[in-house]
Image (cartoon, rainbow, N blue to C red; front, side, top):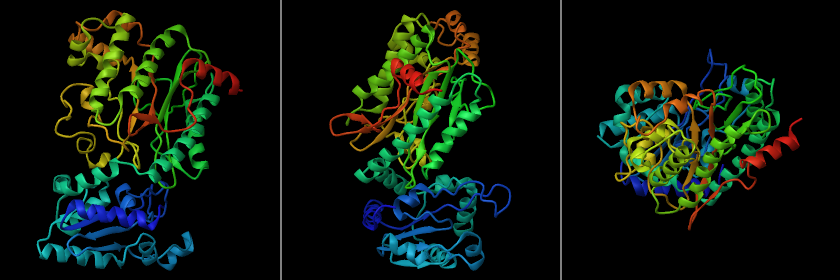
Length: 468
């Protein structure tokens, strides 16, 4: 947790932004695997609840009455049965005191607050729920069917939360740096362990274990695969093979729940082939160009499309693409190689605030993406950058056999793509290089003082020096 003053100041600012009404921030409940007492899934508190109320226990709700300027933490104290099995925990009152909240109620008292708000026709602000149990709770409290809750969520509250959580304070940046330290160890462990004959599952499991061993957790399910063309290729039982590329997309989440998110692609053998280097150097150039382009006032959508033009030009040089680059990018031909956006917001969630709808988080009226065009529809961040934003920089090139076949059959972007040449790369896989960018006063910098190797020679030298 941060200091008591941090949470007091955040709630004070939230009240100013929302202006009136009753704000309700639901914490999460446990998510058992197969019966209530089997806490197989580690508890993860809701990020917005954490941001304003700081407490990690399950079954809590934060209530902010903007009109009366009062704040309340709702929750039931645990009983002796829970204490026997799980040990004593702080009382709800102690938890409230720790974050500067004056009032507490049990869950019956919380229901009474909600009933009173309904009787008086008060505006109730809540965020879009993403868990079924919270949807049922909202239905019980306010009679709003789960199918209608996303539309009934408060846009005033969503905009206020996005405004506040988008800009990271120094204490948040410090936490992101701590996550980067663990992320460095996760990725370098993968580079050391990944060699022919080892399974993807083994390497992925060891990567996850690094996060756990530092009291953290993974910030998302680790992606580790020889099939880098699959965006979310979870580790399989396949043996790593000589001549293949391994893609590792992994991150840590600190005990204060701030994330890292990095991707590295490296040769299983320890040495890139020339064909692999040809493609890798294009991704490397795109990755490094973002560091030059991203700065306050620049739209991240413009950075994305500048990177797409670099990528397409280089693919033309390799004989995989053709035609006018600007026309090709406008038509979406680059998405054959890069079917996702350059990056996304990052912070307490690895895709920060994604539950509030990526359109609300990553865009504004002047930067809303074309949701009908393949590739551009997956652009997650396009709004103007501001000092204190944290975004990922993750260009990639992927050769997806099914996509190549489909576009060839439909003659989609045929004037911009050399399908015969593309067929030769169906066995290639994919390459992605990803780091986390902090937008500074005059430009940007990578988060993480220790750079996970990504320049080709650095990758080969690291593997040679550290792989046993």
